[in-house]
Image (cartoon, rainbow, N blue to C red; front, side, top):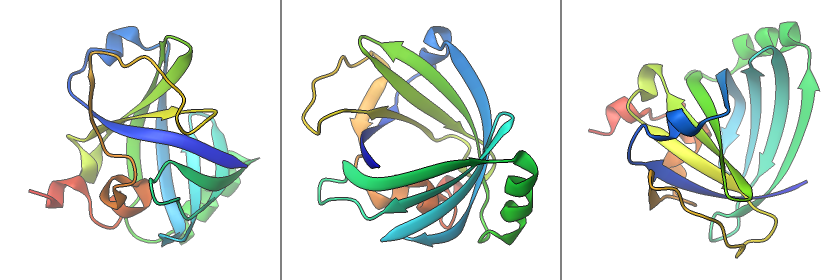
Length: 156
């Protein structure tokens, strides 16, 4: 139930050629408080409810609980979510012994692309692909829950 991950900005679209999977994602937040978020997601043909706790100081570790639910239930719950539904395409890219999940945001967050890597240990080493840019782990504005409230299009 503990998630250890790091987030990075992406500097080019080179990851698209390396991706082995591509999935459409729609998600909303029933609760987007930074200390606890409750997310509803439709990922491809599957629905999910996810609860995440507050991150540690570095932003790398937090509690995460996820449960698959029927898509019809996820669609019904999305109607109840706070304003600011997130639309994105997720690309999965194998780099060395790890898989990077690269989210290309659409709609209000178009122009933003973020890569995440899940680790087994906080200081685990991993191979960095050429398209990996600035690390933004722990920077709240890059959390999906915050992007739903203050989308990328408003940052400029």
